[in-house]
Each structure stands twice: as C-alpha cells, then as structure tokens.
View 1 (cartoon, rainbow over the protein chains, first blue to last red):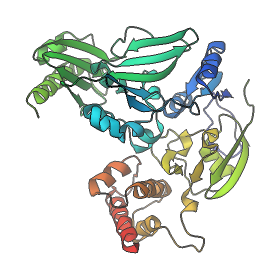
View 2 (view 1 turned 135 degrees about the vertical axis):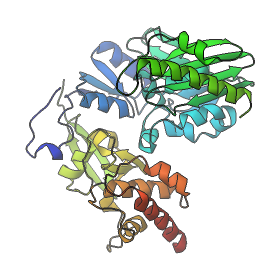
View 3 (view 1 turned 30 degrees about the vertical axis):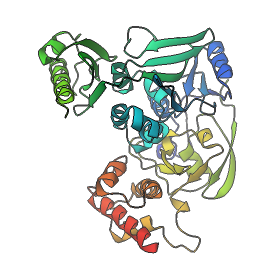
View 4 (view 1 turned 45 degrees about the vertical axis):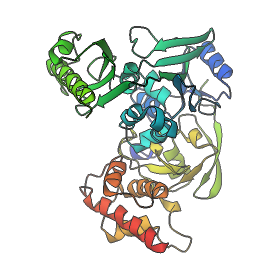
Length: 271
Length: 162
C-alpha cells in the first residue's frame, strides 16, 4: 500500500493510501481506447465508486483514464428488439428510466436494489460490470436476460454474453454498452435477501428458465434448463462455493437452490 | 508520469473557486484544507459511512471517495452553503436541531446534506422513502428514529412555506 507523509495527521487527509497516478481525460471513445492500448498500466474511471475503494486497498495504476466526459455513452434506448444501455448510465439513470419502466420493469426493479442512493447516483453500469467483484450483482441480473456486453477495442467491437463468465473481458477494451433482448413472455425475479451470502436471479420464458447465482463464487454461475426448478438439482450442479465467516460453502450451495426454486414458483404462480 | 497538477474550477456554495490539485487529491481535502470549510467530516475514508456527504449538482456524493478533479465544472454544496446569508437555517438544519436528531453530531452534516438532496427531489417523501434514502449514511448514536422524524418535519416545514 502506498502511503505518504502528511503535515496534519491522519484524520485530516483522505488520500494518504492512494498511490500517485497520471490522469488522462479523453474526449472521444477513440482517444480513450488509444490511451488504454498505449498504457498497459492504465485503468478506466467514470463514477469512481469501485476504483477508489480498490486504490484505498492498495491497488495501484500508472494512469487513470477518465471517460466520464465522453458523449453518447449514457443513453438508454430501444430499437424494438433490444434495449441498449450505455456503459456510463448510472444506476439512478436505470432506476428512473421511463423506457425501462415500460419495456423491462422487472430488470429495473432488480437494478434498483443495487447499492445505496449515493452509489446509485454516481456509480455506472459499466463500473459495476468491469469491476468483476464477486459481491456485485449486475452481471447476475443481466446474465439471465441473455444480455450482451459490448466492448470497443483498438481492433474493433467485441461482444460477450453476460452469462459467459469463462471468457475474459478484452484487454484494453472499453465497455460502451449493454444490450438486453426484449422478449414478450419473459419474466424475471431477483432475490438478494441473503446477500452477501448468496444472490439469485431467475428468468422464465415459456418452458425455459435461466438461473444466475452471485456472491457465492469468484464470478457468477449460470444454469439453464427446461421446466420446473428443483432446489436439490440446482445445488448439486454447482461448483464448490466460497466458504468464509459470512457464509459456509455448503450453506451457500443449499440456499442457492432454495432461492432459485422459490423464485421459479413465484414467477410461475403469477405472484 | 505522476504528481502532475490538475487545474480544477467549480462552484462551491455559490462561489466560483479554482485550485491546482494532485490527481489523487480528494474533494474532501480541497473542501476542508484548501477552502477551509470544515463542516464536512471525514470518518470511514471508504465512501461507506456518508459523514463526508456533499452535493454535486444536487446529487449526494461521498467527498472522501470523489477525486477533486471530478468536481471540475460542477456545482458543489457543503453544509456551510445551506443557511441563508442572514444566518437563517435551512429547514432541514432547523428540523435537526429542534428534533434533537443528533448526539455526538459527527454524522450530522452528511445526514443533513443527504436529506436536503431527498427533499430537493421529493418535497413530500413517505416514511419508507425517507428510511430507504437515509439508510445510505451511518449514525452510531441516535438509532435513526429522530433523524427520520427530523426529515419528516423538514418536509412539512417546506410544505407550510408554500
């Protein structure tokens, strides 16, 4: 961890643990991608919620690329088949979007449970996703919607399914948008009542279901299938969950199945 | 590579201010140490407790988790900017005083700024909305009940003024 001396004592200085860095403030997407390509020690900052926490924990980057001033990256729009959310849209933008209230109300309701009001007003969708924190639920929710994450790199656009946690995000890529397919008969439920032990998202589309499980693994785990969700089946198919004082591995495994089955029952009973 | 100064200019409680800051310098340091406005308090240093809450373009933000350069071009309000020029307290401040919504008082500036942001958006919030909103900040003394009552009181005062 980087520290430096201050004259006034620890309580009056809040930046003592943040390592020095160079600040780049590109005005265009192309410029931002160029900086990221040239500087392997650079990282992106927008709202800064997650990054500042990491830096206070000892994380160090040679440069921060502030993308908050890039135009056109915070919109929420639809073309009739997908809703496209810009990577710089804040959680508050999602919470208050009339378009999402009309087109994806269950997604909007789920996203509104993320963070507190200070975080929701400043933190961005892109920040939540690229942080890849086990306790962050954005990807859990997007995964059961079949959403795609869209990156721009120096080599062009790269698309990655939100539920494809086995593929790394592109190096030096900038997450510009998320696309969520619109499906008339899809319903979704998100349960984070046991967070930070486990969080579960379930979507049902006709006979098909998709399950996303967060908090219990280094990255979200997804399952899909046909017909009813049985708790024991879900639990048995999971890899070994994280075990720590917040929740044991077998408890997380069991409750992931219980919450998934409960969400399925609620969705299919119309509750 | 590092320690290049960044020029920032923003409105602070209605006054235009400018500073050269290091990239890693936080907004709370500029507000407290450079501008001398020590009403904003540093506590957890992790953007968690909300004692350092200020309003940036009317939105509550943890100033300990906001780089100073992120305020560039924006409007920043601190607790010192709430009272009128004649010393008349903002309705939220008055309600906190009259409802004894504090004990040690360390979290109070942040609580008041958070409440101000809520009432600026919704002048008549319900109790559940107040509880949800104010849950972003932490108070280790009061148990929150008096804080919630103070926000309700402030909302009713604003309504009486209309």
